[in-house]
Image (cartoon, rainbow, N blue to C red; front, top):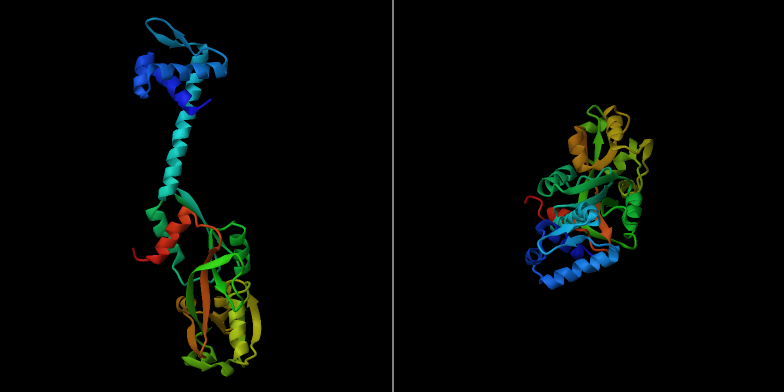
Length: 292
């Protein structure tokens, strides 16, 4: 059974006449009749009672009629849905991010994507960099914002965008360091630290920063949640090294580290050998033109 046969069958039912039905589907009468006969042969029963004056459906034709309408309607809906997917009116984007990503205002960006393409559904997942690498590699995620360290990017992944973000020390307003704006790395050796430990990325970057300076940190608290880290610092239980945008929003005292490399690298990664979905491409376009 072919869609064109069902279309021809419906035309005959609706017009009650082979000639007028043939005109409506832009066929000759003989071609339309042959199409209907082929459908009848496939079903093994007549679909019309033919008289000299009228053509009316048989009981079999009456049974087939609502099914044919529904099948053709769903086929048209499918074509329309694919068209909306192609133009960006419909689709899905699965996106991952590390907890501390601040290089892009992600909520604002997703709001703009939704405002421009409301038919695109977005699934956002927060995880560690290694977990996000796994999810992008296995196509669970289209794209992911990750924090990189000194290791090469995992095979099969590519960095579509990269960002540099300065790191800074934060302290409570009544902490002894609160009175200074800059500090030498070796002067931090006497401090107690609250350390962020949620996988690779920020954690390993901070470890490398202090190792390069030959400074051993005294870590009194290790946490995997940035809000918890900031609260512990706020209560004077230690200082911490965090990305500058997070430090600015925290309201804590910010102390600049006097060292040549106090930045971390962030990236938006995708699969190397896979073309981004239409929804992912539209998201990337917004990143390229963030104020449009």
